[in-house]
Image 1: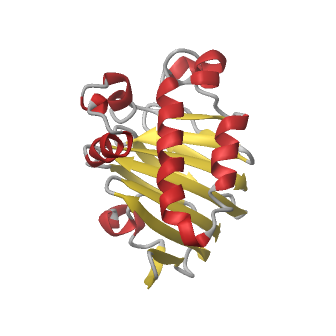
Image 2 (image 1 turned 45 degrees about the horizontal axis):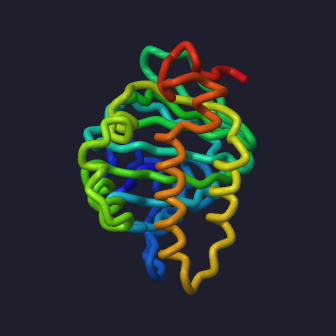
Length: 220
């Protein structure tokens, strides 16, 4: 889920209310759609983590293209989500799968199948995330890293079983000590993004490009 307050066209009916709790915002699902909450942390400029524990009983149907240049990576701990993007077959995410899509994707509908969903999403935005990573790593390399920036501009959605490394990153996001949570969140966001742009196991298992349509794992 992206910055809900900036995506009113998509989320205005889904969200019942919003409250602030310390360093996070908690969005409550409207009874019209189900129940549950999404807790959003702005980890650093250009990066957000959203913890979802929802039971959405009504499909979300909107044909929308986001203007922001972002990449959203969601790990499903429990649940099943059917997502439909323009120019792609319907895609299904279930337990221990990840979905990766960005602002170039045209999301048309999202159906949770009346099942509870527990997941964590990492969302990064250009150009802010580049400056944040440069500062954290003491470099300016990300200003000219076209492979990294390509994650934010390639169209389509990628769904696949999470590798052990990705599963480890998201599992740790549930276990962070509160005292140092914000610092550790920054490290985990950086680790995930660098892992994806390096492709690692995904490069071997699913091909050179994360977003090549013939390599997408659909309806499994």
